[in-house]
Length: 328
Image (cartoon, rainbow, N blue to C red; front, side, top):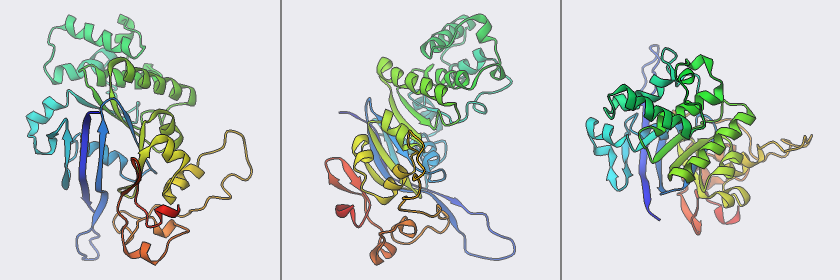
C-alpha cells in the first residue's frame, strides 16, 4: 500500500517563560520529542492521548503551521520541511485540517458562502461569483448541508454546532484535498451530533478516497473509526499498531490506563476502583528521566528510571516503548 505521509524523528521545543526574579538557564517545553510514523493511502490513522500530550502540536507540525525544531515530514516522498512559503501554499491544496472548535474556527463576521469559499480565493482557484457559488454548493451537498440561497446567507451564530462543523468540513474539502488531519473534530459536540459527523467523515473517506489522521483523547472512538492507532504520552509515541490489537491486547501500561478510563455502558460502582496507574501528567519542561511514564507506572523498575525504552516492533506491525513489553 502506498505511503502518503512519513514523519521522521520530528521534534518541537517551545521556550519556557522565565521568571524575572531568578536567572536560570533557558528551559524548553518538549511538546513533540522524536516522533516517527507513516500513514498509508486510504487509511484512518488515529493519534490518542490525554490533553496536553502534544497531539495538536504534532498536527500543526505536519502541516507546517508551526516549524519543527528538527526532523522531517514527507508527503508523497516530498520533503515538505524544505519547501519555501509559496511551495508549501501550493501543497496545502492537497493537505487540509479540520479544527476542534466549530464555534471559533468559523469567522463570525462572514456568511456561510464566504466562509466555505475562502480557500478558493486564497488559492486563486476561482474568481467569478457564479463559479464560486457553484463550488460552495457542491461542497455543502457533499457534507449533507442545504445549498439554498437562504442557507448560504446565514451567519455562523445561526447554525447548530453540528452544522458549523459540517461547514468546516466543506471548507476543507472545497479544494479537493485528499489528506485530512482532523484535530478532535467531534469533542465539542453532543453525543448524537458527534455520531452524525463521525459517520459523515467515514462516508466521505469511502466516497472520495480520503486519507485521515484522526486526533482524539477518546480511545473508544479511535477504535471505532481508525485502522491503526498511535498512543502518545508526553510528546512521544509509546505504542502503535492495528486498532483492534491496541484496544484488545494493549502492551504499554499507559494504553491500559486509557482503556481502564473508558466508562462502562452500564453504571458500575466498581468502575475506577481498579485503575492500575494513577497520577497526573508531568511538566513538559522537566520530563522524567528514562521512561517518561515511570512516575505513574505500578510496574516501574530501576531501569525504567534511567534508560528510555525505544519504540520497537513486538509482533507484526505492533510497536511499543516499554522495558517489560514481553511480559505486559
